[in-house]
Length: 149
Image (cartoon, rainbow, N blue to C red; front, top):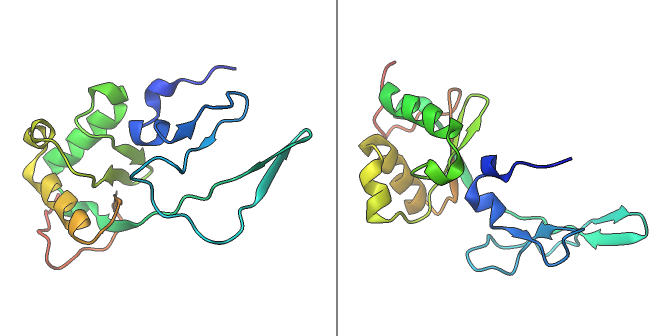
């Protein structure tokens, strides 16, 4: 069975450690990782091989999609269907919205994003989140603009 990596966001694919191709794992040694828990890691046994699973932790915030304009929501829908290499940022569609990373953006990338999305990314960065989950059932934050669709 083959796996199509074209549809895996780059920020996920870059975390895979292929040093043992038969047993890929999450590479926790790369810079920019979220901190690891001090709790013991559970093991996964495959045949006679036991692999320690790294549990990656992160911070995300759930916000209402009402903080986006309908035009930006349409853009996110389109971008989510594109190959990852063609997207201006590495978003991932969810059932009721999108996961959006809030890492630092290049000027070229910023120029391709709408102001409402840039405002939400800045909101997430200011609060030390790694991702935003923009969800239709998410909370509306009083300090962010709300758009009626």
